[in-house]
Structure formats: structure tokens, C-alpha cells
Length: 126
Image 1 (cartoon, rainbow, N blue to C red):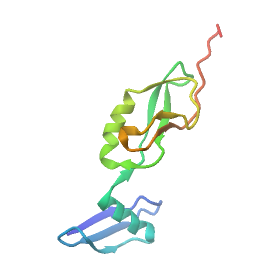
Image 2 (cartoon, helix red, strand yellow):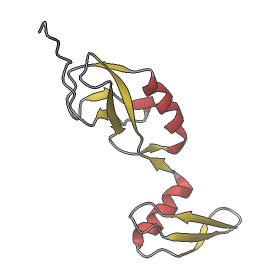
Image 3 (spheres, one colour):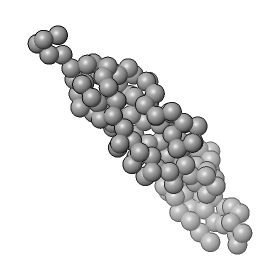
Image 4 (tube, helix red, strand yellow):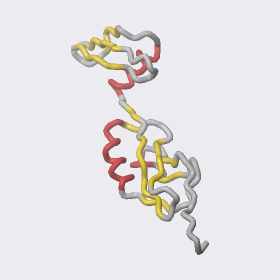
């Protein structure tokens, strides 16, 4: 069996072709320009992971949304579930960069953290 991948480990985007035997063991990898491509294909076949970047709602903030991301990649099959969970989260300003928004997201051991500071919205009465 042959599987094709576009490596996302660097900007080159190598088109990699992988040949597997009947039991799913890699017998050949071609098209990669470096070792990162080989590592990428092996990971994609055994445990595909992605970093999720999105936003969460901010209450009383100068901005209505705060960008967040997973501190490290999580299993690819949990991306939609985590995105849905983050859609329901609201954090209150002030928000600090690297503030944990969701600890141990979906039991993955990976935290979701804020990627920027957001001050509390000031009013004339303050």
C-alpha cells in the first residue's frame, strides 16, 4: 500500500510517498529532503498530533477575544472536541500571556494557554 503525505515540519512542504507492507510496516519512504520528513511520516502513521490555535471569549476585557493555543500538540482526533470545549469557556480580564485557560485539556496532559495580555476594559467611572 502507498500513502502520500505533505510534510508540515518546515516550510518546504516535501511531498513524501510511503510504501507499507500488508501489516502496516514502512518499507520505503521517498521525497523527503531531510530527517524531519521521515520523523513526520512515522508520527502521522502511529500517533498524529496537532497544535490547536483558536480564541476564547473575554469578559470585561479591552478586547472581546483572546488567542489561545495548546502548549504542545495533542492527538489529532481530539482537535474538534477541544475546539468545542474552548468555545464554551469565558475568561475574565485581566488576562496574562501564558495564563492557563484550560489545564490538562481533555485529559491529554496538555494545557491551553493565553497568547496575549488583555487588560480590563476601563470606563470613565474607574
